[in-house]
Amino acid sequence: MNTLSYKGYLGTVNFSEKDACFYGKIEGIDGLVNFEGESVHELTDAFHEAVDDYVAYCLAEGLEPHKSYSGQLNIRIKPETHSRIAALAKQAGESINAFISQALDKRVAAMS
Image: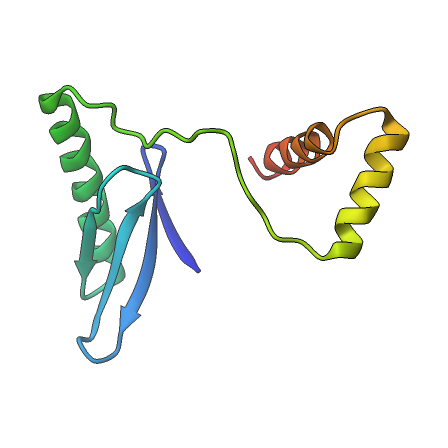
């Protein structure tokens, strides 16, 4: 999936052949904020404007701009992977949750 990034916000990008335009939405916020453009330049400008408008709206309304996450995440994995994680966590003297959390933290840090 194609994305745009601006001021710490992520926008997903799609293309509508029927409408001959790019369109997207800001991800990771409470609410739905869309943007569109007929060229990459127009789309990028529209995304920046959407982010700026969203932040201005939140500030004017006294709202926290970013969506808050609970820290709880349910995932589906293969039973074999689940079994292997459980064994590795036990060997390390950790809970499965701690093992997975550390693995995810390492992956996120490597991609940042």
